[in-house]
Amino acid sequence: MMSNIIFLALSFFAIAGGVAMLVYRSPMYSALGLLISILSVAGLFALLNATFLFMVQLIVYAGAIMTLILFILMFLNIKDEHLPKEPKKFALIGLGAAIMVPFNIVILKAVSNLPDADMKIVESSFGDIKPIGKLLYNDWIISFELISILLLIALVGSIVLAKRKKVNKEDA
Image 1 (tube, rainbow, N blue to C red):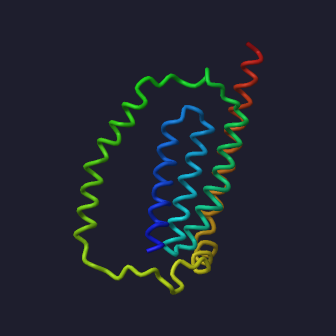
Image 2: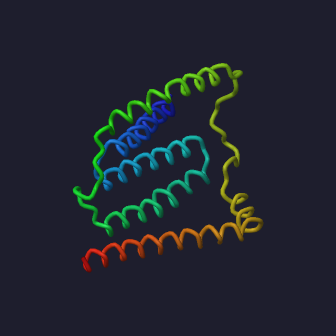
Image 3: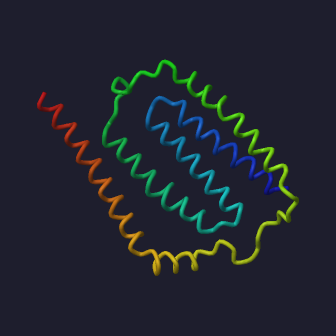
């Protein structure tokens, strides 16, 4: 019973964060809406006893990626007059929501037709981090390191582009 209430609250916050991300004009408020959504999804993973996904969601997305996004937004110092005009923003959001309704109905019908299953929360070692870590660092170490280098290149590239934009403004 209590887990159902927590699930509904986390689901509400995940959806509200997504809506806030779409509705707010300021990039900072949109990023904070994304952060609310990411933290809510992390809570849902914790509720499902998926320890690894919960930790990755918190450390990688809520920690590193959101810090990077907020740092870049503050570094760029975007003013309201530099933002594009979006006169049909809410109409497009409504159209997107209307398009998604039939897909959601199909998914709900498919889920309701699933056979009854035992829906207890798993108490075993399901979702432990240790087997995933061994697999990641033994079999996938090259891919892991290449992705870290790719993220570093993206960070350096965004800083270079931001510096170039400032230098061009000073020359003009």
